Length: 88
Image (cartoon, rainbow, N blue to C red; front, side, top):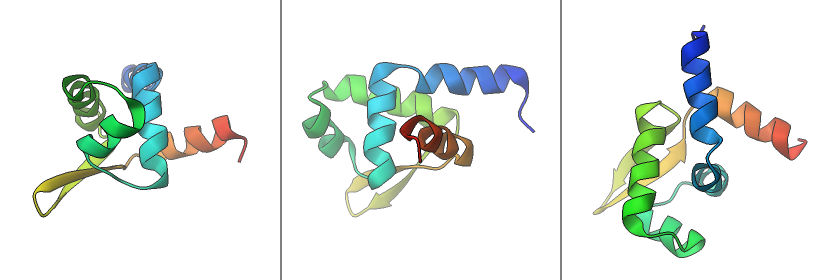
């Protein structure tokens, strides 16, 4: 069971508009920073910062595919929150 403080950090992280857009995009399929940048039109350093925040909290995980690093949503609680928000 996660502490209240950890739960609040997770909710705060996914509550940021850019991070929510990143998570929603990754929910469908994992992708790399370049693909995220093209999809959202956000500068690469900004995307990298937000990915780092999400990864450090365990919300995302990454894996290397050739020269690219692909990200996907890892945390089950966040997947459930996204389902609730989407009305699934």
